[in-house]
Amino acid sequence: MSIAEDAELAFPKDENRFTDALKSADVLLTFPADFPANFSDKAAPKLGWIHTMSAGVDRFMVPGLVNSGIILTNSSGIHAIPIAEHVLGMILSFERNLHLSRDYQSKKEWHRFEFGQMSELRGKTAAVYGLGEIGLRISKILKAFEVKVIGIKREKTEKPELIDKLYSINDADSALPIADYVIICLPYTKETRHMFDANRLSKMKRGAVIINIGRGGIVDEDALIGQLTSGSLKGAGLDVFEQEPLPVSSPFYSMPNVIVTPHVSGATPHYIDRATKIFCENLRHYLNKEPMTNVVDKRRGY
Image 1 (cartoon, rainbow, N blue to C red):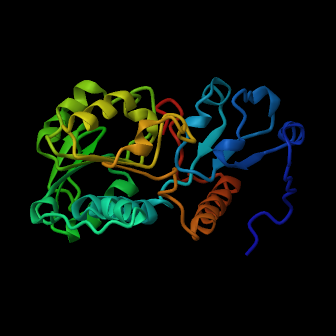
Image 2 (image 1 turned 135 degrees about the horizontal axis):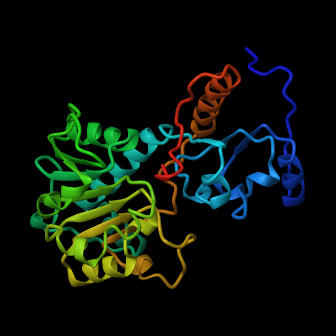
């Protein structure tokens, strides 16, 4: 069923054509990488709504958009299934040393770990920072493995059924000394930049693992490298980094207790279909002047 039969579509293939198209655009559908860092609403006088095919919106937090009346919506929710499974894969790798076994395989070495070097996920504790759809999906999967889940969100509200204990972001440090896994699902904002600095990382349980699928800038990478090198932390599963692509000079590449994936935890063959569905539903709402879903609070940055 057509939603906007009379709509005129433009697919600008370069920056100049994009600039020209914005002059008459009412709606913009885009990926973060294509959004101009110097965006100004004055260059888009008719633009009323921007939808990004991503969940993260930090690329859009520029004055020209934040200070405008333009609505910004995202595709939050479409990544929950693949990211939760990605996180589970990292966790099981650390429990069963799968990443280390792969390293030995590449060197054609037959290496059997001692019983004490292999572990079980059952009975462990995980602190999930961020209880959006991704964080809740991760929690649901971990509960199936009989993991105790501590949830952390901006404000302490009614505890979700899947969560064993709930903390607000202000008292979240209480979870660090008891969590075997700290899983970061937070958006990148001014408040979360380097939230996991040397001080906070030092509060983590000795032998714990940190997993970041939020944004690289939430973790102070130099401080993390220090904790990993000293042996205070068992490992890190990292899908996001402060600089992407991760420079070849990064120590992370050569650290056996670090799993590096190149910002692909949300990748799935269903990505475009799911994001397009959200856009089409919101387009109907927008044209009918109805409340829209996934509206971003531009002041908060998510």
